[in-house]
Image 1: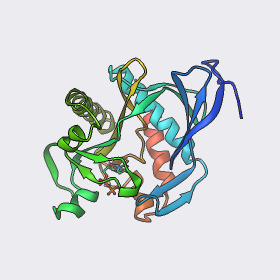
Image 2 (image 1 turned 120 degrees about the vertical axis):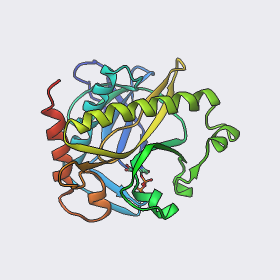
Image 3 (image 1 turned 90 degrees about the vertical axis):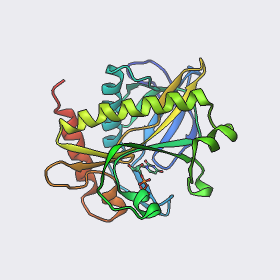
Image 4 (image 1 turned 180 degrees about the vertical axis):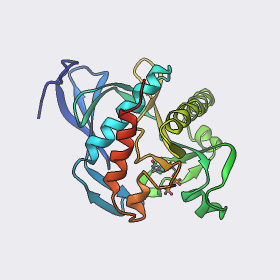
Length: 247
Ligand code: UDP
C-alpha cells in the first residue's frame, strides 16, 4: 500500500516493522518513518491480547499531544507531526535496546519483585532499566550491564537519565493540572542518522500509569491488565482532559 500523507507530502512505503501496538513504514525520505497505531492491546509479554476499535486513534492523539507539549519544552524527540487519526510522522531512529522506567509511586512489577508496599510515594523518582528482549521477558538490568554488553555508552546513559528526569518533571506538572497523578511510565530512546539522541516510541496510557487525583480511578492499561472494565472509557477521559487543556 502506498498513500500520500496530508501535510508532509511524503509517500508511505513498505512496512518495516510490526510491534504489539504499532506498525512502522518507510517513506520516500530515508530519514523519516510513518508510525501507525493499532487497535490491539497486549499485556504480560503478549500472553493476554484483545482488539478494541478506536484504541489506536486514542493513543495516537494522546501520544501526539504529549509529544507536542514536550517539544514546546525543548525535549529532543523523534516525533515530527500527527498525520491523521492513526498515524504520526517521525525521524527514523535506531532504538537503544533499553526500556527506561521511572516511578513516583510504588506499584506493578516493583512491588512484585521486591515485596515493597503498594502506593508508597517515593522520596525522589526511581529510575530502572530493562533489557528489551521479548524472549527473555524484558529483564531488569543495571547500567553496568548496558555498558559492558554495548547497549549504550556512559554518555548515552547520562543523557537518557537527564532527559527522563526532565520528562518526569514536565509530565507530572502537566497531568497534575489535569487532576491526574503520574504514577510511573516507560520511555524508549533512539539515535538518528545524524547521531542525535532522541526520545522515541510513544507516551500513552499503554506506557504510563495515570491515577485520578480525587477518586484514585485507574485511567490506563491497568484497566486491561486487571480486567477493571471500561478500558477505552479511561483512554477517552485522558484524551478529553488533554485536549481541553488551555495552552
Ligand atoms: N511499561 C511499558 N512496557 C513494558 C513494561 C512496562 O510501557 O513492557 C510501563 C507500564 O505501563 C508502567 C511502567 O512501565 O507504566 C512500569 O511498569 P512495571 O514495571 O510496573 O510493569 P508491569 O507491572 O506493567 O508488568
